[in-house]
Each structure stands twice: as structure tokens, then as C-alpha cells.
Image 1 (cartoon, helix red, strand yellow):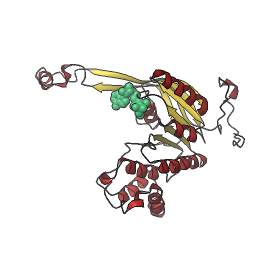
Image 2 (cartoon, rainbow, N blue to C red):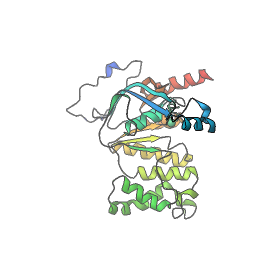
Image 3 (cartoon, protein in one colour):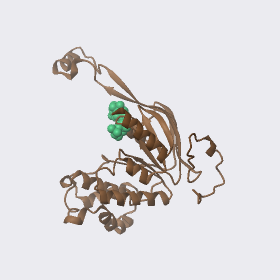
Image 4 (tube, helix red, strand yellow):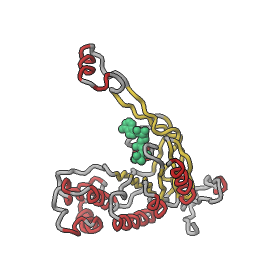
Length: 281
Ligand SMILES: Nc1ncnc2c1ncn2[C@@H]1O[C@H](COP(=O)(O)OP(=O)(O)OP(=O)(O)O)[C@@H](O)[C@H]1O
Ligand SMILES: [Mg+2]
């Protein structure tokens, strides 16, 4: 990008190391997320014997054996990359390839088995299952969500109407004063996105959040992601919607089986991924 800010610190990023015909140049040289040879292993307790039957549980009780087995799922296997300020990074790959796991590790919710994650500031994870209180009204969730992000109360009041307007929840009646459990999954996702997008984040992690909104909301949120990126932060977007990735991200990382297959300019990586998925059919 021609107007990349020039900073005095960074020299370690060289463009010539990028393979292939397209060369990816980060918009700045200020690292915000460093993922260094990260391995994530989930430990699943109490599986493998007795098929979870009542007799199995009873015999474990009688024999006073505690956890019978622990199965390990090695979800991420040695992933390394650095993301820079001003970047929107797409994360793609088939189901179970480790995308959500990596995001949770960046958010600090999962400790790596090996390797390290360094971040600049506290990343905010915006997922399809981000915490919302279902019995509270949309209105209360907006206020709570903003306070939870560290926004002062006065600013919450000031921003409240913009957030509700952006979500479009009230377009077909006064839904914001109804409990969240009365919302469709798309409406809930829109409200979640609108709350998170009300604040600029140093690192914003979005997991499939756009997928449930309708096409008009998707366009609006893509615009907002672009703004957030310009407001300084780094945005990670996990999606199976390749068009949204192409629209929003300059750089894309492709994971498969917990291993990084490719990292580079979105066009090149998404093309390769689509070819791979096409062949798999
Ligand atoms: N809580 C968990 N406990 C055990 N294993 C898990 C857990 N969450 C995910 N896994 C496993 O980790 C691997 C990676 O899962 P992950 O959710 O990161 O995939 P994903 O790329 O986000 O997939 P999708 O596209 O379906 O959202 C999978 O093999 C999955 O079974
Ligand atoms: Mg996922």
C-alpha cells in the first residue's frame, strides 16, 4: 500500500521472502499479534470406555475410579505468524481445521500447550456464541456489553442510539425492549456485532459473526470492519464466505488439520483454497 505509515522501529519485515507471484506487503510495521509455534491440545475427560452408559458410571463409582480416560485432540499444530496494525486477516479452512481454536488462543481463552501468543492490548473475541444474557432485553444487553468492553457509562448513553440503529433491530417494531430470547439468530448476531463494533479495538477477532446476518447487514458490517481497520486496529475474520473474505481482507491464512497451509495475499490464498475444495468434492 502506497500510504503505509513509516515507523522508525521496523525493519525485520522483508517483502522478498514472500513466495509466489504476488507479494504481500503489510500496511504497517507495527506488530499487534505474534503467534509463535503454537500448539493447542484439548483434553476431553471421561470418554472412551463404557460408552457413557449408566452401568459404566456405576461401576466407576463402585470401583472408586475417577476420570476413566482422557482423550487429547491436537487441534493446532505449530502455527506461526505475525499480524500488523491496520491489517484485516482472513482465516479460512475446512470444518475442524482449527480456526476458532486459534482465535480463542489469541483472545487468551485457551492456553497453548507449546509456543507463545503475544498481543498488543486485550483482543476482543466476537463470536456467534459471545456471552449475551438471553433473559435481559436487547437494551440491557447493549448497556452491559458496552460496560464490559470498558466503555464509561456516559459514553454508553451517548452511543446507545447509534448501536441500536446500526443493528437494525428496531426496523420492524420495538424489539430492543424485548428479551434477547425472542430474537432470531440473525438478529442476535447483528446486535452482538453492533455492540462490539461500537468501540475501536486494538485487536478485533470475528468468528463467523457475519454469516447469520442478511446481505444488507453483511455489507454494512463489512464497511464497519474496514473503518475499524482504518481506526488502527487489526481485524481477524473467520468465515466460510469466501466472497466476504475477498471483500474485507488483504491477507489470508489458510489452515488445514491444524497446520498452516498458506499465508499471503487474499486473492492467491482463496483461489488455492477454492481449487482444493473443488477437487475434494
Ligand atoms: N472444546 C473442545 N474440546 C475438544 N475438542 C475440540 C473442542 N473444540 C474444538 N475441538 C476440536 O478441535 C479441532 C479444531 O476445531 P475448531 O473449532 O477450531 O475448528 P474450525 O476451523 O473453527 O471449524 P468450523 O469451520 O467448523 O468452525 C476439531 O478437531 C475439533 O473437534
Ligand atoms: Mg469455528
